[in-house]
Image (cartoon, rainbow, N blue to C red; front, side, top):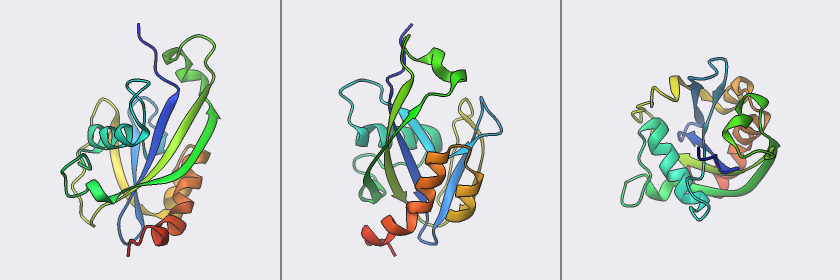
Length: 157
């Protein structure tokens, strides 16, 4: 059995209108969240992890060569948090903390979302403050609330 690496990304996907994409977890249907995911290997960069996870979970392509490639922004922030008890079995024994790196991805209004049904069962676009209220994770809620700060910093209008 291979264990998950306790280094992950959180990607806030948003439109120019500052609506945020939230996706509902298949394994915890009361949990709405942004795109999240762990590194596949220790040497995979957080940026590559973010680009891979966005594509795997939503079908939105921000990988090298895609039109969305320049719209992924590293927010330069990390959260360190306790791994939820129901998911600790996925990590090596004695691993209780995860480091999560934050990104934002601007997409056009009407971007086509295609969920991976093994991971997520529904999605919705909400204004960033409403998205924050809907997130199950406090770090995800805080990231949504930071959107106006990064929105203006990255020159998105």
